[in-house]
Image (cartoon, rainbow, N blue to C red; front, side, top):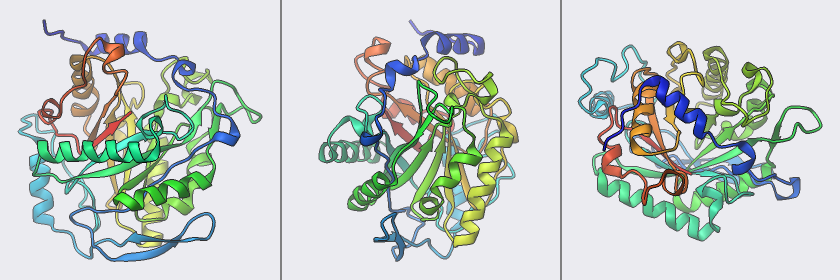
Length: 365
């Protein structure tokens, strides 16, 4: 029997099933910290030339350089295809600026493994040893290319660089930063498979202004992108412990990051940055319609709630489709969408491709 969820029902269901932070996030000891990032913008609209950048040890890294032009006719055509027959008038987003040349979306669909190298429980990226992880990721990429040959799927490594914590820490911020040397490790992994990289930030009781500039060296690379997670942003929740309630970020906070990233793109003559924002409730981004768009950015609102398909599709409809920003993403959980949801398998690619609009960023945890 199909289950229908109202907006209130979805919110209450998610709150009831919300993972307690310490059940899903093992304590991360400083000597074990892993921080990942990845390389290579292989968009069909990106050039094949490379330029030089340097990692935290001063070692030279070859990274792609963006195409000099944007195929605007193809871009607009692909936006219509992404809308997937949406008749609401919301998609494609009206008055969105054309991106700078070198844009990854909507020319490609990113298939990303998310997680932290110090924990097998935080996601697919740290669940397996490197060779197994890469083999599994590339297998998922192939399956997505088979399911939708019109939008080339490319691999991504999405690393949680700042993790919310179950203890306040010495500075009382309830978050922990991963060491830069692990970013360099994953950059080298990404180079092997021509993958794009995401740095993900969970601020706890810190601020975006404190955390994001820590990674300017990496965000100044053309192949490194950014994700932020309102679920663990607790300043708007009375300073409560991360994981005890679902956190929140305002559009003004998000717009500060957008302005910062756009500035890096201009300063370093980069292709557009993908700026991904996690969301599965109204309260996580209560004023999402006020998020500002930039030619220098491609903003993805990623539906990252877990549960049975009707719940996931309902969350996508209410908080992603009906509150359009620019592009959309969808998260799949190897464990939570199956074992914890009483199902044998996750939603299929075919089911996800029926969503309106079609997600162009797919994340596996």
